[in-house]
Image (cartoon, rainbow, N blue to C red; front, side, top):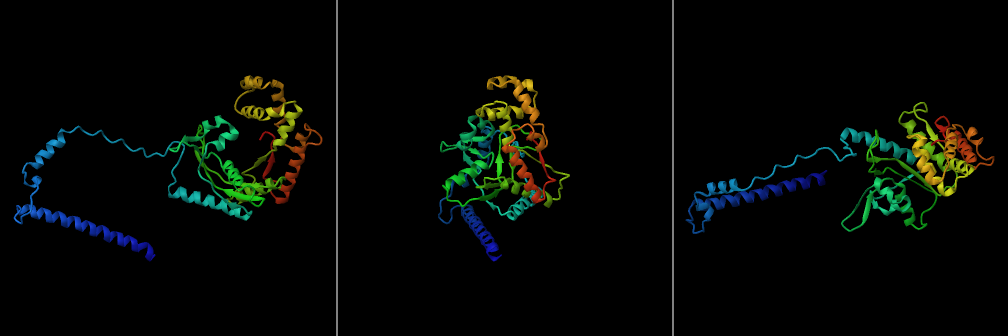
Length: 335
């Protein structure tokens, strides 16, 4: 406490002392002028000129008027928000719940710069991803971007250690992320998210542990399985379905993008894109009918008998039952 208050007192004294010297100096010079130079000192022309005030005033009035100052916009930039103390208390409480759960499951916290090289995102997603980035060229002519997500930064950090990290890794972060895209209800251009990542575990056990951590958080904040459901699926499902339908593997990603669009637009709206991919309309129709399945049994009926996707999902739900979270987790092939 002493070390905190003492500098403030010293600073106060220093300011007072400096002010005193300025006042004293001004008084001395004024006194000398009033004496008319009786002490032999030189009198400034500004002091002896009786019309100095009127000359100064006329000079000021003849100068061109300054433009009015632009009013300060007190709103934060579009897509962002301020955190006043009540909001900050709520945010701090929420983050503390995330940190407590992560620690309970043995995860270590990490962070990375908000500003990253633009190439970190364009390398995999292509140049078109820049339309969704806050990106610019800095004063050193480097193409940089505000991070839209945390996974590329995590991958960069792990690669930077060149195999020097002991696996498996269990790391978590609460990053602030930025995306320059159209805002919707509940989705701004600036957001925070809770990331929990497991590296070095090839089995489905990592997913089950993460699902359990999610449920633990929901329970800590007073939610139940009646309030929240967690929908899960496996990428292997759609991969096996597309293989059965004769879609080449190199067209899997583009086909999945088209299927996602069907949530917002009718099938006729993507007919041209289907033709560009060389896909028949019936392929997407069969695919969407398969993806309406809501149980592992029903999806297993349309996949090969030795389906790896069905095995994986079956194991996942057994692990969820072992964690006691089976009431929270739902299979949905459309996810």
